[in-house]
Amino acid sequence: MKRGIKVQTMVDELGLTVLHMSEKETMQIESSDLNRPGLQLSGYYEYFTAGCVQLLGMAEMTYLYNLPENIRRERLAMYFNLPIPVVLIARNLTPPDDFIEAAKKVDVPVLMCGLTATKLTHITSTFLDKQLAPCIARHGGLLDIYGVGIFITGESGVGKSETALELIKRGHRLVADDVVEIRKTSDTTLIGSAPDVIRHLMEVRGLGLVDVSVLYGMGAVMLEKTISLCIHLEMGDVKDLDRLGLTQEYITLLGIKVPKTTIPVRPGRNVAIIMEVAAMNFRLRSMGQNAANTLDHKIMELLG
Image 1 (cartoon, one colour):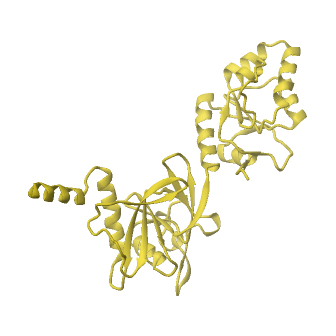
Image 2 (image 1 turned 180 degrees about the horizontal axis):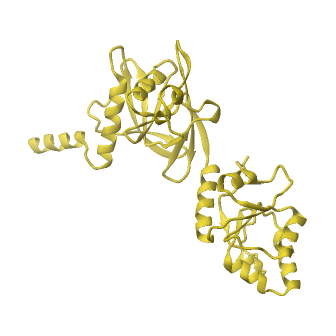
Image 3 (image 1 turned 135 degrees about the vertical axis):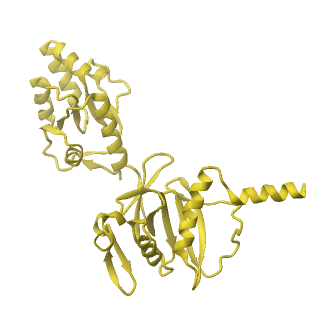
């Protein structure tokens, strides 16, 4: 089943003006694509995808106004008889009366915005890409550590929430605890966030629920964060652990490979500090500084 968002949601989020709103409660937008229907209004419908948002700017509106009334009515009737989810009009341009009449006959929403067509295309496309992106939920936590989105995984009871609490106390920010909703907003980007019902909440064994935004302030939380690194906590000794860090593990989420680091958890180990170092080391590697590779090259030079 395809994901979709209600037209009213887009109206509220983008601050659009409603010229006509559909009475169908099932009316949803299911595609993040936008179409400028200049060719369709001229009568050409080959390769036309009707299921996406239709955006009309100055060119389309000027063309409609310059058409003879009988031809305009015929073209609009043909256009609105297609399964169009919503029509957006840029620059607060007033459409012809027969435009609204044709939309009302088939109950297609018509919205208006004061932005230019180019800017409206950008903000609408960005909004739809985010809302309609493929989404999964995974058990774990997500924190912003030194600007790096760290996705913390591990078996239940390994200490994920307790480690996250220590990191928050050290000045880092919580995005999600226990359940992380992950969206694929592009071919290379994963955005993590918390479900609305548990946003800013943490469950700590022995204490119960803790509201981090109240306890530590709004500076200790974030609504969402790009996932850059996965840290897996594993109890006890980890077999086949690369002690030098020459090989990089990955975890695949929604078809995107995310670097993964496994940290053994034992009594006495300060996992929070290790995570801070992992985040800083990740940033160094992103800038081309890799301590393991440097050591490897030095050893090879000595042996060679």
